Length: 426
Image (cartoon, rainbow, N blue to C red; front, side, top):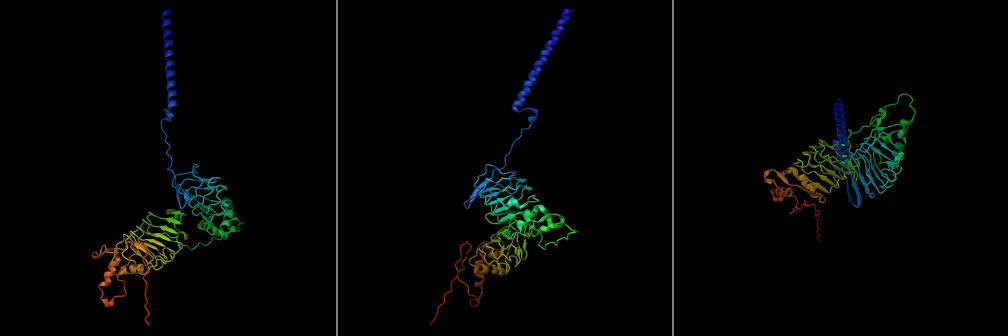
């Protein structure tokens, strides 16, 4: 009996030792897995993919930082301090904190449009005493005070439109500042969204009494401004440097947008679906110098389409469906210097004569692409050759005074003006 008891005790002791050994090995394996990152919690390997690097370049001896569309939420500390222009549009910045840009004291322009900015601390722009241009349109700002802008004494160009401005007493100092005569280029298009009775009114036209005065009885609803339909500027992208540019390329536009900012200098409407240019499409854009209408499929231009473009210097009509240009279309372009006409199905008949003679008499306009596409007998001819052949078929005594040689400025070199020699016979 004692022998059996001893055997049973030995059996249990060996089993206990075996369990301890197994538990020890399990703990070691677990520790090894943790150390090597193979534990259950670390079964998914997380990879950090950095945003594409920003572009830094120099133009006209000034340094630019192009960091648009990088999903940024803050300013990166490694950016060079000698930047003159900073492009941060279309990112995810939500708040501008105090001293956020203080190291960039040479900055002239700051583009923050199309972010998610809802708050700007009072000293966010501290140190930017050379800044002249600030773009804050297409954000989520509701209220702002004048104090934000006191660190920018040379600020002459400010965009605040397409923000949900809440026109209450907190906005008094900002509205008062914007209404000073010296600030005529600051926030011209910003409008109230709240309260309902002020919705649509420009900040520059708000009376302080409307937002801070005591309300006695119902307030009269202001009459809406009579304007052209609002242009959804979020479709296009606004650039300030090197010139004020509105980029509306490839937006599937079927007509020229209305309410384009009147201080636009360069307007790019290429690669859209605009087939007709109606009367006075651009009359309010007094400063426009460059207009690109290429690759639209334009088939007709109204004679009054370009009314008001007295400062236009460059017009691109290439790659459209134009067969001719009606009389009067170009008469308002007094300072035109470059006209691009390539890739149009120009029809060499009598209707093409206006365009040719206008270019002939405006010898300072450099043009290209004026080549016959139809009819088949003239296909591939330069229009000047066709016009010359047209007059060669007339009787000699019916010919107008016409030069023997047709100078052509399609090489974009100025054509010399024909001189007239007068001989005086005593």
